[in-house]
Image (cartoon, rainbow, N blue to C red; front, side, top):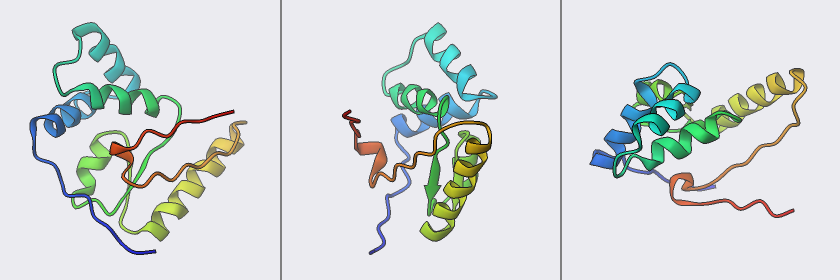
Amino acid sequence: MTGWRVPLGSGVGERLCYEGLSLTRSPGESLDRLRRERTRGREQRAFIVASVLRDVAIVVVGAERPEVVRACATHAAPTLVEGLALAGELARASLRAGRDLRLLVVRHAIRALPIVAG
């Protein structure tokens, strides 16, 4: 597997996403605020991520600023191997809570929309 890097964004959308996720105590609180105050233009990404975080954990691998990742209620791992190990730990913890084990690895996840067909 070859390595690839997504550059750290510094635009308005990235800033609004960070604010939308990091200025609250939980993804549920973020969703409540975004619904109550309506999302501003380019803040939709925060709403989507917070919606996902209600049900699953997100592991971001290779972030230049892992503290930013953690501030947004997601998990940071420096390498893919460590990220997969962390995802396994999180999955095993959810299994103990009686949940089904599911793992989805999405390359370029912020630009991709996985569709579950069933």
